[in-house]
Structure formats: C-alpha cells, structure tokens
Image (cartoon, rainbow, N blue to C red; front, side):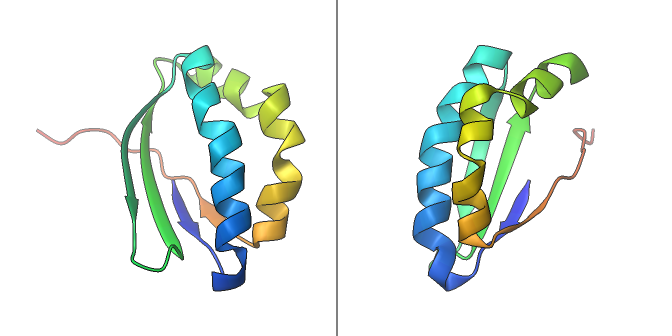
Length: 87
C-alpha cells in the first residue's frame, strides 16, 4: 500500500492507522514493513495475508469501517499494489 497524504491530513491519517493496523492480526494479516518519509506525507506498508479471503475480511472489519471518516478527513490517496517476492 502506498499512501500519499496532504501535510494537513498527516495527523488524521496517523489516528486512522492507530485504529486500523492492530486489526490486521484478527484476519491473519501481518505488517511486514512500514516506511514513511520525513514529513509523513508518503507512507508505504508491506502487508501479507495468507489468502484473499482474509484480506476481504479485513476490508469489512467493523473497526476499519468505523474509522473510515478519519481516512477521508486525512485526504490520503491510497494505492494498493499486489506484489510477490522476486527470486
């Protein structure tokens, strides 16, 4: 996931993540790496789910859905990229 967050939305985005990222484990998700630039306007997450069904469950998690207004308030533009390891 790549998030591009306007500077004015960094705080709201951080609050959204604080609510949502702990929910990953409930769906078998694992945050493998989290990267952020100096001012918090770009954030990259490498997240692993064992199956598409687990990812689908996370996407409809009640806490995640209830936190959606924070994500909207942040103004973040989110890009989801499905990737695999390269040998």
